[in-house]
Image 1: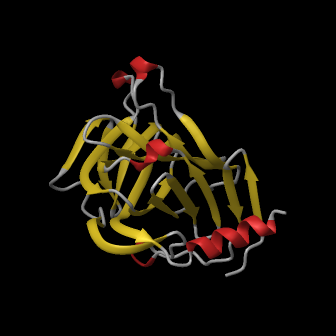
Image 2: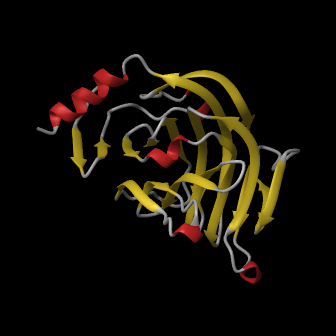
Image 3: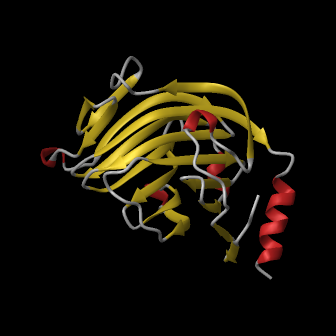
Length: 227
């Protein structure tokens, strides 16, 4: 594995250009988590099936994928969720931006938000969500990458979660890693969100997993490259 750049700033590690070719989600390369078993798998070829709960927006089956669009009257981004119980693991999916201001794959606890990977045409980020607004807890960007994500093209996102760590890889080439203790909460469901015109999703896979035996070595190499 070729490592070309690693950056550690204020506890946030950003890794760019890992030199790994993009894979379909089902065969996605992971760097931090070793996949154990499948929790949820849905190609979305026929749209949302049983188990999906749509709260807001317009969702339709288009060309073998699910297309989501914000509805102005909702005064809220489009959202649809599915139960997926795990603590540490991997979530992978393909997406295509089609005018959306932004999209995300969010993870919730039984009650309340936990975290998400947020995507827009100018880059992507891993985010700790606001978990207790009454207590003043605010959402926090843990790591981000400013990279062009072309609209109208399919892209692959792989999100790995272990303990307080969130590691997201776009198209097998650009990876960011963020850390926050609030991320450690057990996950109860996952959801797609769309802000603005529209975006499409397909090939969703959620798996539980354990920490890769090579993770410490991989992380050490990244940190050494930054010295």
